[in-house]
Image (cartoon, rainbow, N blue to C red; front, side, top):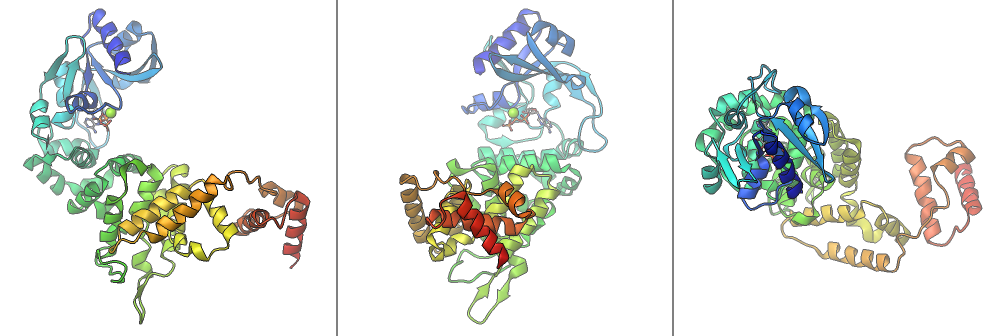
Amino acid sequence: MEQAAINIVAQLQKAGFEAYFAGGSVRDMLMERTPGDYDIATSAKPDEIEDVLEKTIPIGKAFGVILAEHHGHHFEVATFRSDSSTSDGRRPDAILFTSAKEDAVRRDFTINGLFYDPIAKKVYDYVDGQHDIQHKLIRFIGEPHERIKEDHLRLLRGIRFKNEFGFDYHPKTEAAIRELAHLVDSLSAERVLSELTKMLLSSRRSHAVKELDDFGLLERILPEITAGKGVNQPAQYHQEGDVFTHLLKSLHDLPNDWANEALVWAILLHDIGKPRTFEQKTDRIHFDGHAEEGARMAQKIADRLKMPKVLRNKMVWLIHQHMSIGTIKEMRQAHRILLFSHPWFEDLMRLHYCDEHGSLPIDLTLYNDVMAEYHQFKDEKLLTELVPLLNGNDLMTAFHLKEGPQFKEILDEVKMLQIEGALTTKQEALDFVANLIKS
Ligand code: ATP
Ligand code: MG
């Protein structure tokens, strides 16, 4: 990918324009990290970019951004620009095509304001970005309050980069984020979601969430989580502290190579149902039904943040099921096999692992037992070969049933009987369901 990006820069330079790698990729290269993408900044205007490069898509031509394709890779090629300040703290109202230096100073943090010429192998640093990378500092370019007011997303971006890289804040940057935390309220759901998800996918995810809380941002974005503060838990299972502490510790103890979007969100939210289901009984504190309540609340959070359906469905399922591992040994074996064959089962076990790890004392006995049985079934190829005798369509056509919770119960029962060998043909399954409905 890097070579393809260099080729694009070379083509633009050959045509007489300035062209550099810009922003995150330069930062990553100087930090000896592999860049996720290469953005290119150039003095060429959008029409000129289109003339010079072979394959282009005008994705944001009005803002000077052209997407270029080269050897199967895509790159954003953007004309040097300065954004005129915004009226609503979201997006620039208007832009001006300018010089490299002015393009550097419109960027958010000094570490993101660097250019690199991969042909001349030269860094262009108009903002002291190299100094701040060396000293591990997150510092706004220019006056922090102004920069946050221009685009409120920078509150979250600052926290993300600081924690992702294990940097410190420049004192003025930190103070401004603290003072202007309330501006997060005006951000669109999509931008908040995307930034939070990136934070949760980065390795220092729990530090980032902790800091969102310290800055007063978390209670504005996800008050369901801060509601866990001061909510006590039964001491014999949860010496780590209150519900909030448990959520953060669970997130902290996730092995990094397990992370995926739905799982990290599920870990963060898995116990948000606890404050509402808290009950001090004679023996100890109980949270009966907290997984179901938590799943309902997570569904609302998903709607509020406009989560894509695929993310929402899996996250909500994981939260809803997270207590089921606790009773897995009492399940009938066919039920267990059914759960083992679920496409999200492995992530459910990962959530269970983090839940256990987030608790003190840590007890992984059940986790290890269940995984051993799961692998045994998997090795014996018992999990993948089941072709269901009936599906939803069969129920609708044969019995005029409507989709609903009952639907899944019937299909699951048929599957379990199939696993147990009690049903072997479609006709037997249909007869079984006919009888079930009659009774
Ligand atoms: P990563 O891709 O690892 O999240 P990045 O720095 O590449 O980090 P992008 O969102 O891809 O971040 O943006 C590319 C560059 O555009 C940034 O490095 C920064 O220079 C600039 N930029 C992005 N978003 C903003 C913003 N909200 N305000 C100012 N500059 C921004
Ligand atoms: Mg990037």
